[in-house]
Image (cartoon, rainbow, N blue to C red; front, side, top):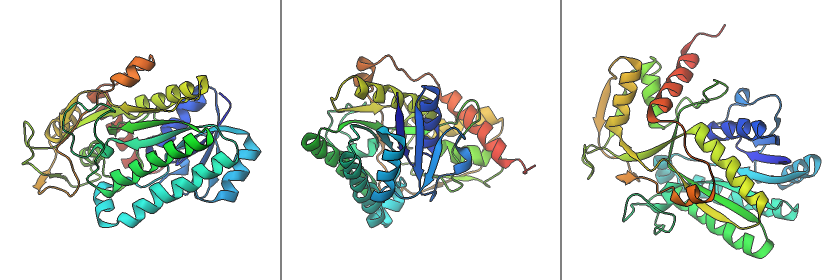
Length: 328
């Protein structure tokens, strides 16, 4: 598989991808500015550089010194409400700096890239489940920043021969079943992370934003995928690019939705206790329902998500129990 650069590799999904690529036999080089990532979650067998993806001199040096043949781009900002309040941060981090990275990779002769995109590019979909052919009409700056970068990849690929695999994630949850890494951002906005923190005493309670959506129980419905399954999807997408130079776009999800209330119920069942829950108004930029149609990816590769919602909850709870234990 050769040498692979993983940007944002000290983050939640990125660190799981680091382990997945090492397990697949790749040499892994990580570039992360540690603004949200945690270096301690990385294995020593991965080479680490601290820095920004838009640092052209640093990226060029990494590519040349390690013979990098391909890259995975996870680095960026991901909080929807923050993107509404501070859109410049999202267009800068997700779109502008990403362009600098890709331009540098092309200049260095790197021929393939897997990009961490999002279901937020679909906005409020006309139909659920959502296929990759659905209209892309984001309703928040986070979604737009990712969609703009997708367009940049198409244009740069057409002009310079860069092959890319765009993976549009739905909701990512859980932690590495072996306990090697997990969601380590204390103020993360992932629902299962927050509920697991509440169940392990790291939060006094949690909030549910919006109970009047046009869904069966009034709360948002999302398609959840275990982070280890998602990391493995990156490996198979990268292998597709190794087999040929055709760019592709895939949804990454299970194809089934769960409401916020259902997820909280699953965490309460696994933890054996009720959670203190406050009900508040809707957050800006949240669509009522996002569920993937993953059929396109399923048709191309043998990969399938292996972990259930219960697995996501159990591994997230175990990771949070570790975080809650006193050091030493």
